[in-house]
Length: 222
Image 1 (cartoon, rainbow, N blue to C red):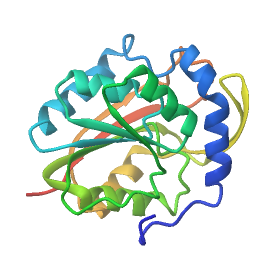
Image 2 (tube, rainbow, N blue to C red; image 1 turned 90 degrees about the vertical axis):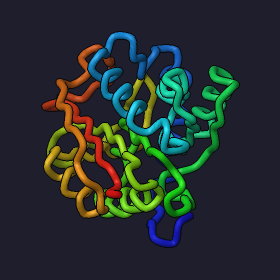
Image 3 (tube, rainbow, N blue to C red; image 1 turned 60 degrees about the horizontal axis):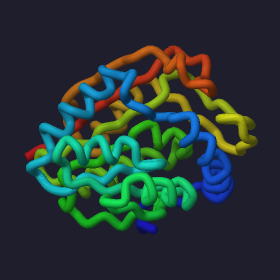
C-alpha cells in the first residue's frame, strides 16, 4: 500500500460485497458499452489521446469489459480490481490481457510511469477523505500529457447500499457534484480536458435515483 494513501476501514466488507455480486454482474451484462455511444465516444477520445504515451491502468476494472474495449482501440492497458472474483472473470473472459487483484489504495505506482489512468465508476466507494489522495497518486503516476479519465455518480451525500444486482452488499456510494470532482483533480495538479454529463443509467436494475453521471478527463501538464 502506498505510504500516502489511507486504507478505508470498510475495504474488506466492500471486497466481500463485490465478490458476492460478481456472478450476477457478469450474467446481467452490467457495463456493456454497446447501448452507450456517448460513453464509447469518451473512451475513444481518451484512447486517441493516450495510446502513444505509454501503458494505461484501469483501476476497478471489474470483469474487464472496458479494459478489453480500450485494448481493441490500440491501448496498452491492464486492469486491477479489489475483488478476486471479478478478476477471475476478467482473466477468463479476456485471457490476452493482464489483470491483478488490488485496491486503488494499495497501488505503488512509479512516478511518470503511465500514459493514462481510468477510474470508470470504480472509485465511488472510497471515503471522501481518501479519494483526494488516490487521485493525487494517479496524477503523480501520469507522464506529462497523460490523462486521468474519471466516471462517477452525480449527487449529494452518501447512500448506504444493502442490496445490489440481486445480492446483499455492505457498501457506501459516495456521491459527488462535478464541480467538486473538478476541484479535486485541480488540487491533484491536473488540468481539465473535458466534462461530459449524462442521465443515470435507466437500464441498470440497481441504478440509484440520482440526477445523473459525469465523465471528467484531466491531463498532467507538460
